[in-house]
Each structure stands twice: as structure tokens, then as C-alpha cells.
Image (cartoon, one colour):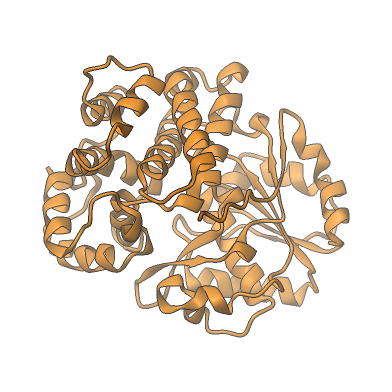
Length: 375
């Protein structure tokens, strides 16, 4: 028997941002904290959101590239000092995940660690999580409808905080906010969305609606990503890319796989600081080759959806796409060194995404996968 929940309220289209005041009113939020980052603020998007809200609305824009426990606590202090009663997350996955952490600790006792899913924390997260509206500014993360947040603790562990109550109360997906996104970031975040759709479709867990959504999302991403990268102002491409990103997030319910089990601990490194979507793009081919023969007809179904030749090797197609975008060809190019690999293997084995990889993965297998991804 499969329990299926889909999922939260979503406002999706060009111009959806204008609905934010009404959505906050419906949530009973009158004093929100805007959580964002400096890049989003520099692009003028924080100002656009703040213009829709009371002039005294506070902003926390110090979200790091990979959200941390320290940053959660810093934003929480602003939330409490300003007497806030809800949050608006604006940005990519990092601000949205950081806002989820603030929403959790605003209503639940510290420390944050106790709510990590691998430490039995899901049952400790109650419906009391503070109200959250999520507004993505990239087409990749899916976190606006995801039930989890990835946060790096002070000891360097990047852990997942996952529960149904962590899903934002409303997602406002306005493709207009992605117009003009630089080509490199469009490519990296777009590959993130494509990876989400592929990994969730390959998860062995039984969720037929999620399979259909993931397959459609992979088709949209494959059809439109190159157009969006080539012309950041192309509205016709930006809409389906944001939809593909949303679809990837909707399918997180199935679980991800070894790509994310590897990218999560890598994302916890303080040096080098690594972009999550780029990591997924670089790691995906190795994992696809590892999982071959363990997914039934799903590679063929993905190839058909992505308009690839029937005899195409999916891993090679992803490598070719990465190459056309000028993304790194391996982890070493991203600054990952051999010295950190043993710790990354430990992190991957312990990561919650590993359990839903279609082929069982132990420490030896992860050592092989990291070796493949390093070269």
C-alpha cells in the first residue's frame, strides 16, 4: 500500500509574485522576516518583494552558499528581535532551506541537530513550525515544495531535516524572477532540476503519481534547458524550466539516490565551497553507470521522454550536456582533493538519500563512485 500526499499550495505563472500579500494574509502572517542572500539582494529582487510588504519588514540576506547552523541561529535572532510571526524565503535552495531551519527553531527547542532525519528527528517536528512562503529565484532547487532542508552543522556534517511539516505553506513560483539569470547559473540549476527528476524516477519506492511527474519534468528540462542557457530572457523557456524544477521538488517524496548522498557531504565542505546543482551534474553520469542493470526499463523510458535516440547511453548524454554548458567534467576540477574522500564516503553512507538508490550502495561502492567522479 502506498500513502500519497501532494503536497502544498502553489501559485505558478508570470506575475505570481503580486499574490504574496494575499497569501501571507491567508496564513495569518503580518510581520514576516524575508530570508535571502546577497546575490539575490544585489539583483534587486529583495527590494521587489519588500515593496509588497510593510516598510518595516526585516531582511536577513546573509545566507551562505550552503546554509549553516550558525546562519540559522543568526536569522532566528533577527526573527525574534523583530517580533516576526512568519517567513518569506526568497532565492535558490540555500535561502529556502535556511528559512525552513528558522521556521523550525522559532517554534521548537534547540539544538537543531535533534531534528535531523538520520537521528530520528522526523517524529520530533510538529505542526507548530512557523508559517513559510517560499519564492524561488532559480529553476533548479525544488525546495519550495520539498519537505526537507539541508543544513551544515558546526561539526561539518551536512544533515537533512525532513518532515511533512517542513514543506512551505505556499510556493510562489514566478518565472519572471529568473529572467536574466546568468548562463552558468541557469545551466547549473537547470541540471539540478533534471537530476532531481531522474533520481526520483529511478528510486525503487512505489509512487506512481511521482513517477509521472518526474518523467514529465525530465522531458521539460531536457527540451528547454539549452534554450534558457542560450538566452536568459526567453520567457517561453523560463516557464517550463521553472515547472521542471517544481516537478523535481514534488517528486522528492520518492526519495533521491546516490548522487545526492554524495553531493550532500561535499556541500558541507568549507573549502572549497561547492555549488549543489553543479555537483549533481558532475556526479550524475557515474551514478547512472553504477545503477545500470538495476532499474528495469526506466533508462529507456527516460531516454524517450528526453527525446534521445533509443540506443543512447543516458550517462553519456548527460556528460555531453555538461560539456556543452562548460560545466566541470569531474570533482577534481571543482577543487575536491583526494584527502577529503574518506570523509565524503562516510557521509554518503550515512546520508538519508542513499536508502532510495535503486542499487544498494555500501562504503566500497561509494569509494568506487567517488573515484569515477574525480576523473
